[in-house]
Each structure stands twice: as structure tokens, then as C-alpha cells.
Length: 302
Image 1: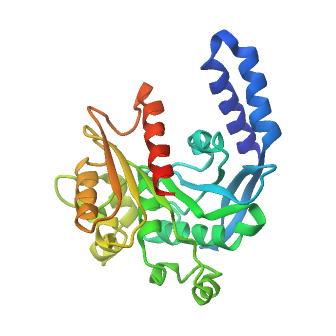
Image 2: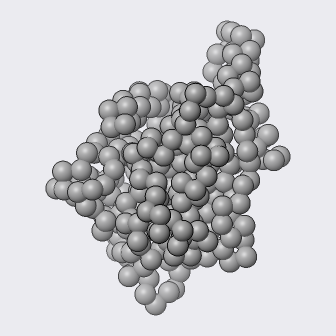
């Protein structure tokens, strides 16, 4: 709870500082919008793995006329770092449009190697489906999104078939498969996510974070392929939007172009937004334009 309060304080400060001329009015507007209209349910356990209770936070309107569009956010950090609390600001554009939001924690590499993080985010998605009625999630308007490793996890979670073996450790797996009501994602918003994991564990694009996530497992190449979105491109995928800087030194820009080439080949609705000269995020004053493009894409496909 302390982390949530810190995050909300940071959000408030950022909002006020962005409008220095009318700071008092900004604070009033923010209070009216966030404190009066939003409810926060922090640290809900959605599954337990390796003896660790995995948590998610729910943000939702206090009042609505029915189920609302919902964004599921997965934080970045190369599968080795980051936290859901550190990603709260990424929820603001969605909350401002009346969405509910689910902010997901997953196992990092120091707790469990690949493919553990994928197993966890799949369980989180199924939790959203199981608890949609209670929390007012509109599962026909469900958006998966994340940055970097979170972009990868958003892609693979939304692209894997429902009967994937990676879902088998979810405590409610058998129930969901029997009912056939696992949420079908309406759109995936991928911020510079990894699409070919094996490309990062050997060769010119080798990255320390990917090697740490896979570890020294004897079948690490097979695992890397198993959790790579480029191997799950079919004609039945949800619409996918990718935002990627063409000077990204952390996740090669080629990961974005390769994925969207494959998506085009299967006639999947998709869009790649290239940020010229952009690195690994930090797109400065372009975020407003990028979020306008995101919501235009979402509205078009919902």
C-alpha cells in the first residue's frame, strides 16, 4: 500500500508541475478526476509460484454504467528488474479515458528463469477473465501493453494459443479451458518489445539481460523460441501496434520490423510507428502524439 501511495504522490506532482501557471487549478482538477472517480485495489494475489505470491493492482472507476474497457499493463526491465509500482504513470492516459487498469507483477530472473514470466502473465490474463464481472472489466475491450520486456510479455501473452502448455500451472487453468472463456485480447500495444528472444542470447545482438533470463539451461535455445512472438504469427491474432525507436541499443529495431513483416504476411491488422533517432524509450515531447496514435488504433479496432 505504501508503494501505491508513493506512486500516486509522484503522479500528482508530475501533473501539477506540467502546468506551473495554473498549479492550484491543476491540483483541483486532478483531485476531482483521480480521488473522486477512481478506486485503487492494490496487491491482489493472482497466483502463487515458487512459494511467491504474485500480485496485481486494479484501478477502476468508482461508478460506471456497465463494464468498461480495460488495459492490462506489464512492466519492463529485461525480465531481470523493474516493478509494477514503477510503471504506474503509464496507466494515466488510459485512466483519463475511463478505462480500468490492471498492473501486473511477475517473477524476475533472480526468482525463476524463463519461461516463468510468461507463465505468470498468462495467469494474470486469465485472472482478469475470471474476475471481470466483479471488477467491471469489459473483456471484449481488453488491451495488453507494456514497455521493453513488458512489450514482449504483452505480445506473447496475447499471441499464444489458449491450449498452450505454458498456461498449465495457473491454478484456474482447467476451469478456463473447460469453459473456453479465456479473454480474447482486443489489441496489443507493444512499446519496443523483444520479438525474437534467441537473437539476444548469441551473436551480434547478444544482451546480458536475455542471457540472465535464460540462464544455463541446456534447452535454452528451445525455450527462447518457445517464448518468441515471431513464432506465433497466425491470421487470427488481435490487432498489434508497435512503437520503436530506430536507434534503440537495448532492443534492436529489427525486432519490430521483422514482427510486422510477418504480421503483414498473415494479413493481421497491425501498425509500426518508427521514432526516427529514438532510443530505448525516452521519446520526450513526442508522447502526446504517440498516445493519440495509440487511441486512434484502439478505437479503430474496438
